[in-house]
Length: 234
Image: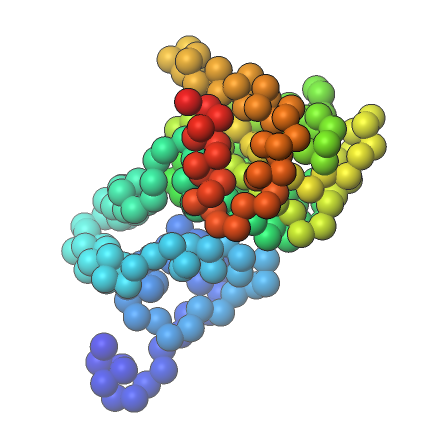
């Protein structure tokens, strides 16, 4: 505030600026600009779009009062848990215009969305679990649809991600058909989530029907997708 009062521009440049987990703090501190490598920009933009400045200012104030790095880490974790919906699916887990040029970028985008919403605590480990499942059996089922899914200790809460791709991608499978619709399921490891595993067959049975797939493709808002998926898994 003092710098702004004196007409000074305040920015942050480098690897720290691209750490999306810290974006709410930087927003709360009032930085005018965050400069980072291009690869970090989509994640940071996604976080910024989901934030309210007053919440970020309160977070920054509490962070400055924290005595240790561990306290700040816990503070950030609570912030993400409180400010992002924890239903099986929510609007921040939907992208109606996902720009992905390959299967690898699709799986990466799924992991990013789950991490940003606080549902995955180790993105790389979760991506590895997705790839392991794909290596066993590719998850495209025809109709331009893929259902990448896995069970992993990196997952905090059962979650569904939906991506409608702007351009189809090669799913690198025997089917050989391009994929433009992604419905991904992430399940925590452990026996306690056995009931949640029933989400996959429920979704699969619904996705067989052309009218349901087209309803997903034609949805105009993330809220429409959320409503369709909730009806399908209820």
